[in-house]
Length: 191
Image (cartoon, rainbow, N blue to C red; front, side):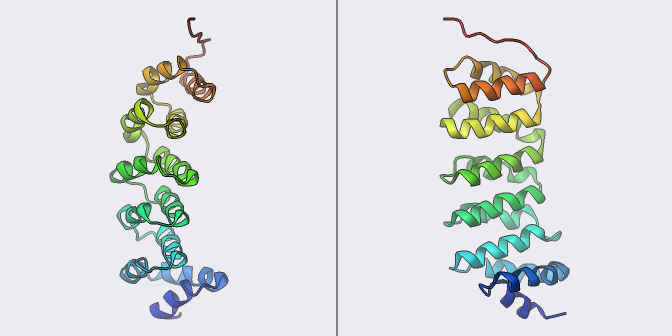
């Protein structure tokens, strides 16, 4: 098996097939590879940082803390990879950063953060309910869709409130959430 330096050079070589081939070797090195990967993650090249995040996301030795800093990366593709990677490295400690990522100007980052929040489970419900009360519409949709997937009864009052709004999209997701919670009713906004 190639040594750590060779594998890392292949990972950030700019050659996709070499990078893909290096991943299993880096992952097999376990914790030995983490310091070198994190150092490479400080590269000025977005492509290098993306491959580092990819490797961290696949490594069973990496933790959510290793990936969280990449949610603030200037490159949207790196933030996307970090949000996706956090889905595989679940941690309640990641919830605040994932909630902030719902507001990301790149819609894919927000969508991937929403999916990661769903995977963290019920601990994120209060934060998602808060987002429903004070965020821009696109962010509220992401939060509401996550709440629908989580099927947590604490979201019922927030969903009922959203149904009273004039947004068809928000209303649709609120209705869907209430139906999944077993509240199959017709909701009519009084005029």
